[in-house]
Image (cartoon, rainbow, N blue to C red; front, side, top):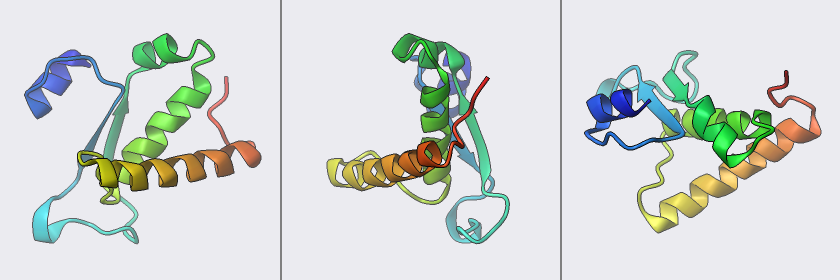
Length: 102
């Protein structure tokens, strides 16, 4: 994960999740398109943060998908919007028993 993070973003630190859109700029796909891109998650980081791992992995997937849909978390105000969406989706998944499970 560190190697991929370094190659893709010039930062070889550990990370929990990375998103890679299929296209960027004017040709970027929108929320209605079936294929937005790839999300890579790191189970090792998830296990460090939450030994039960499954809720944390689901959170990473939701976070990565939101990035592919155009949400950003670089500025504080954008991060607040993204976090609200992320935890709303996570709450829905939990209430409908759709979390990643063993």
